[in-house]
Image (tube, rainbow, N blue to C red; front, side, top):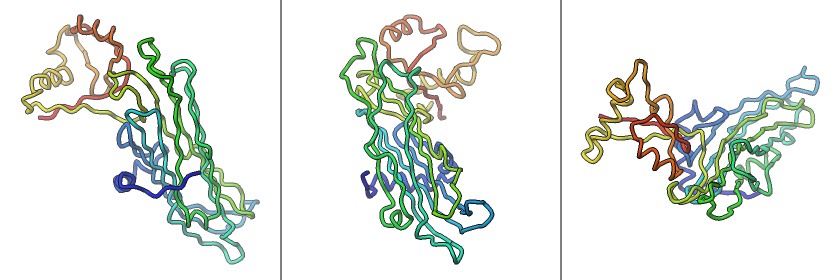
Length: 289
């Protein structure tokens, strides 16, 4: 386990995350971009005895998870913490013996990954501590990587590894019944790849649930003609060819997909007015006036 104090980037994400309270407290948290995600989840727990008949006290705290993926590295980092702990035990209950735990686990989606998908997990994936220990050291960090086999994209292997990182929360005391509401308390979908120069810095890791938008302005002289054509395709598809009743064009509700296969790119360029199915990263279009 590694403890970590937030640097400037961490602090910025925390501040932004706190302003997205409704989304930040969900299971997936607030996904700022393909490279940053966060969860801030407040808890108010009532601990009861093993029979479930007697209240032992209440426990309040905030759970934080900050996630960072990288363009250029097959790596994702999470900074987890339990903070702002407050307790209200009954007179006969010793709250110094109460514990909280964060337990991370990983699942690989082999069906959507390239051959032999692997994720290297951190040496420490669980932290179960007394409340006083969390108070003194609230933060800890975890790093997940995927083996880098070198450039194989020319052979059709982009080394895609599609995985989900889960976290389960536990709360316990010697006299309390087990807390059962913490399973899949947080989950984060990630993808590692090595798609070559066309993908940016050849390789990287992204949070796949991020909504990616390509924004263009009709007032920008550098792209205004392209923006107008895209605007017509998205909002007036009857002006595009071939045309038919009820035609829709992906880009607003249905995402577009970036193509990284050069053979398919060349084919699409030769047949630019045809309907086409593209694979790769999904993104949406937004045209500004």
